[in-house]
Length: 492
Figure (cartoon, rainbow, N blue to C red):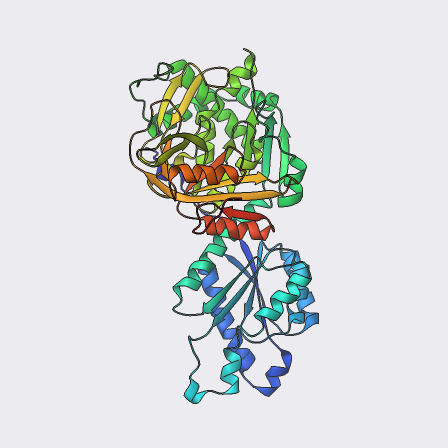
């Protein structure tokens, strides 16, 4: 029998990380064995990086500008996703800039001393040069910033016994995984934005230009065709999967939320199979969709996405309703950061309990559900036309992160983040997801701070505190990013 854990378990992508060391060629004759010692330190770093899940593309130690240019060209040919400069001694900035310019991907500078401190009593110039990891960092950052190539990040510490440094390097491997996915993503765009929601309007060309992804325009007719090709055996297998993964509770207080009818379940399973085919045929990484409906075949199709879309989202193919391309991308980012990423908006507050419910009536990331998700049959899809089977659950209890992707008055993308906690407790039996969340400093101030930061009304909700990783990813694209729950935050 399939469970949430078995169905949604997947091997993470191994991002291609280019690594090069840097040093000065004139040291080698002056201090025989220094270059070899530095290469040994770099080999240790590269081995640990591979153990963290990166596919390491090593260019060795770069000590001349001409070689740096050759290395950068090689990295571009190798199609790396992230570049790491391992600074093991003083290096001229002219031996780093050409490699970064030609590689064409974000740079993280890694400065790890071989030991926590020199042996001062037996100190030598050789030993100092072996520990000179920090000397050239200001020079490198100055040159890179002057060239319009500011580093996305930097990690300073020691090669061994440094939990802080290696936690941050582990985070950068996750960021590289997300960046690798986003820059080659294919986001399907099907239908139109929810009418009247001015924050949903988006320019697909700007997504292509900013993130390197591709927005693939798809018609509902394409999904109709995929659904028409579904065979009875596929529907039967999908129904078995649905029955194994979901609970079917007795109706609650809501008169529009009752049992899921067998005929509606069968149609939902058929549409779910069609969505699987659509994703495969168009090689989609994600999909944003919406259809208003006028009592026709499109309405019947458009109102039956929730189960199939939630299954796909749980498998790492985020599906965003109301044609929210931005939130589809935010969901994709959180998923590749191993945080899930469910489709959410702000729901009612519990001021006595200092919490806010967050959720939505559309597709959700059921791989991060607290307990077994629920299916209910809705006679009305509030705010939309049609009826159908809907998904209800909470996000796992514990730390959570909200990630909203918005745009400023000039159209520039911006991430808005918040870190809080998912708490146990009841949610309304309405066939929608709702998670009981607490955010600092208190629920009223949080909603004020969040809203005044000018997000769209949708956001992705993930498990764990990963705001720092999203901020690192934002720097890879040179985008603004603000965490409204960060200590000392002041609203605009």
